[in-house]
Image (cartoon, rainbow, N blue to C red; front, side, top):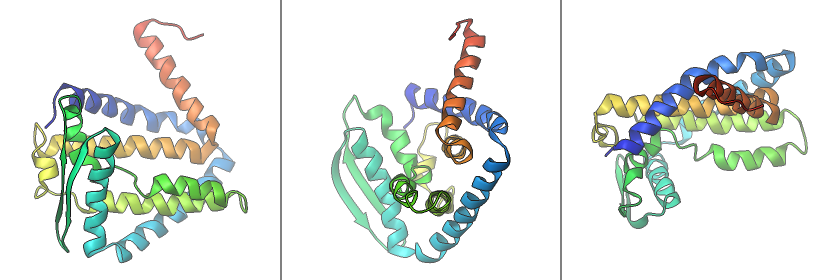
Length: 216
């Protein structure tokens, strides 16, 4: 697993993961720090909750569900789903058109924010009662996702070792993807929609400098 599309996405992720943390600094002001404190408190709580509650069958179920969710999103056909206390597996049928996604599907349990995605909806509901409750909710959800993403990583995981290039290529992809997702979420945490717009425009400016194209 892992052809030209996979490595193209890997190099793109590495680039964005290197640039995004730097671009976040102009977004920091007193209000942003206050927002971050609420989010970080939720994140620590989410790590603690997931560490205690998500074990055994539930942990394996979520792991395999992430494979399944991404596989379904790209149009593959479900075949089998098996859960045991300490391991499980998910099988699917793919086509020539979707084969390029196999490596990413294999790595999905280590980056796909399956708790944070519905958590965004909960955050919008929570925003009706408090401006800071959504930050706490998203922190709990994302903290849970981060713990579950990194807890299972190891050289025993065929999800990583069967990637072309081996374990460290898979690990690099996971780290880069999690940095990209984290920085996008942080941009919103710090400055809302304006934070995301800022990141997008800054990347366009950098692309313009590299290519000589103007976006004005």
